[in-house]
Length: 332
Ligand code: SF4
Image 1: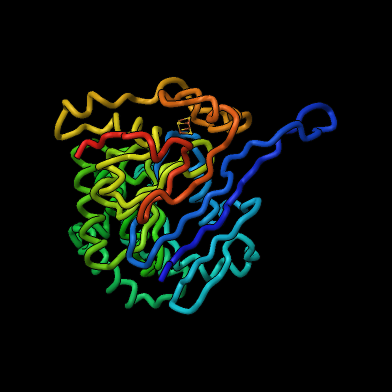
Image 2 (image 1 turned 135 degrees about the horizontal axis):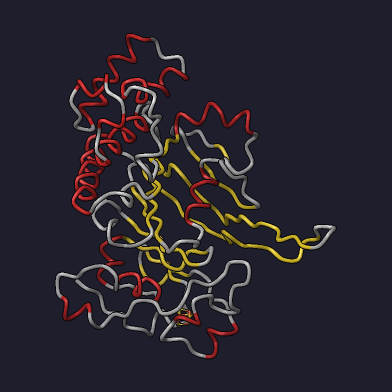
């Protein structure tokens, strides 16, 4: 049973110019994205800055209204709503089921509120009585491995990693069915990143979390995700089970992203090259495959014909004309 099914999601912005503000083009920030998240599954959505991954997550949270497509969300078995078309008023009661972990643990916590009030704020907004809030606060502090005394201190008393734990506790307060984690470790030191990843792994085990984990590279998602979707210029170019994707990427862009991930066997990593050049402009993407100006394997067909996302093997979808013939070695 899927908790989320995104079908052909699009978010386009008009580009206007001149005195009459006529539309002269469109930024295709998200251009036909489809994926699902099964209950209890973590899907990582990965790509360089500007690829559209944040726009996808903002559409799911309905901070943005999609231009087209559907976002079917099942808060409970047998219940389903399309978040893409739901009127804002009807969205309000659903918000408790979809919670967010923010990127910046410094900016996302109100410095004038005590930690206990921050964590229990969603409970208060949803009318949970004070005694129940106090009880839940203690459970949440224990879940994120913070001492009970943390509740009566202000955020500035804590390190970045501890603040992110507080943000995670707040996100879990209402027992959400889906957590959207927007680069939850990218603002933290590498050693602290590992601690937060371990905490998320522990929470996945204990709570069976369903999560969309947004990240700008592949270095942090290996251990925390069941599957990975790689985005490039508004589209998914590869989606696969995590182990299979790391072992043997099938899209040249995935291969380039993996070049930035330290490998256990450096000799094999040397066979990979990071992507050359700049990310394509979503307002003016190259014709054919948008990755072709950066792709070492591009052929004439790539410059004129856009590849569709197609199944290549069990559980794996790739958008590349040469996916079957290329042998992109994995780091193992
Ligand atoms: Fe490279 Fe062509 Fe595949 Fe695009 S379609 S990734 S340009 S080989």
